[in-house]
Length: 443
Image (tube, rainbow, N blue to C red; front, side, top):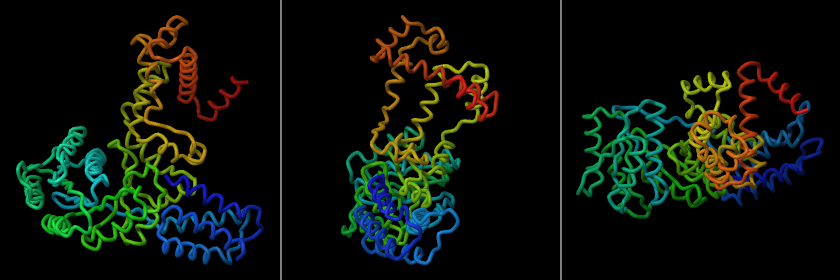
């Protein structure tokens, strides 16, 4: 996501490298490159021009203060303006009413059904809500079944009416069911539709009027670029939705939709989807997205993602095992599972400042831990609990059973032992002393 734009902006800022001050000439040259980069990223032309004009106005006349270099000053101005372009502050997501009602809208294939499941999971686990998913897509084959499959994974009920082809009636009946069964959140998944299809647009407008939702969200595939912005504008003219959800931001997208949609549609982006897994959903943070575009990572989103998958009780048990030097391969596998729950690994790594640029050409798939897991699963239960007994013959057996080489098994065992030592040191002394101790041992 945004890799090409990030690289282009980085090249643009190099024009200012070594300059003693900001001048009209070097600013104009830099911003000419910035505008090209934005347009190549499929940002709306008018939005790109307005953005560059605003940056230029703010950059001119600025003195380079203290040790701040012209390039650094320009990066800060561009960062601040990118943040404002995408909305400034994170948008509020309202969950009010008994029940609170969320209505999904968008084109077919934009990811509404998957996002409905993701949102139900998030609000159930983080806000303690009792959600009811409503299947109002009566047109697409297997749409209802897809919603049921997603719902079963997060233990959430789905409201359907067999034989009923009236989405307005289904939505109305679902609200009554929610009140009767004490569900405090209703998420209505609707059929995909084109803005030019008057009959379908009238239908979703009727659903909205009937159920009076707390939030109406427009779900859009970020990979469609500028077309996504145009479609959002057409839907908003008819529906007056409350916010946008950008899906597939982990894909090969140029990012133009994220940068243009707030200005063109004048509605905030509220959530982003960053993968197929039900955990892959984040609230949209304009400042964090600006950080990532400029290659600075997004450490706030990284920490939030970690907190969502953090189990205090498990952490306490793990700390006790580490202190007694009892950390074993079963614990190691549990930690891998926790990391995998956090979503796409490359997307996760790119949130860490400085890492995104370093791994831009490296493919990190969801099977990145496959070899490690195969090796551990080829161990006997006793070997996993007592790694110290794994001698030469056992290593050869494990390598053969896991379809890996003896060198790979040896490497994992060595890395595991070093990790175990470091973790134990961290529980018995402050981190700085632990680091110094490890450095001395390496010498």
